[in-house]
Image (cartoon, rainbow, N blue to C red; front, side, top):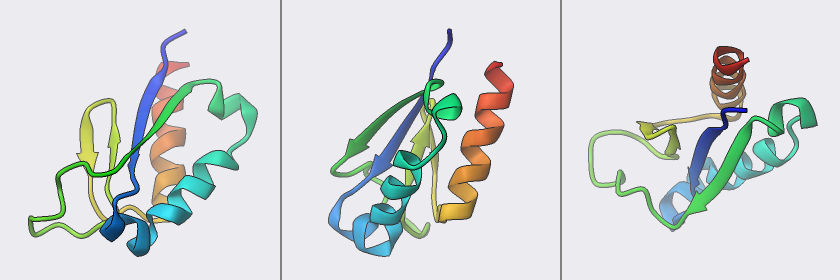
Length: 84
């Protein structure tokens, strides 16, 4: 089964700008979604110095800025649909 790699930035800036909430959202997803994910956390994804707003995530190598709880759920569900 192909897994989706999800990396959440939990560096200081991302953490206080919502990264902590993103971690909680991922951990509370239903098991039928979690089984398709490889979740990891990074102290920094190296994105904070640009014009994009934190928090940042990386999904299968693609960096995404300004992720909210709702957008994270949408992103993950869409990725899971693509691999099922």
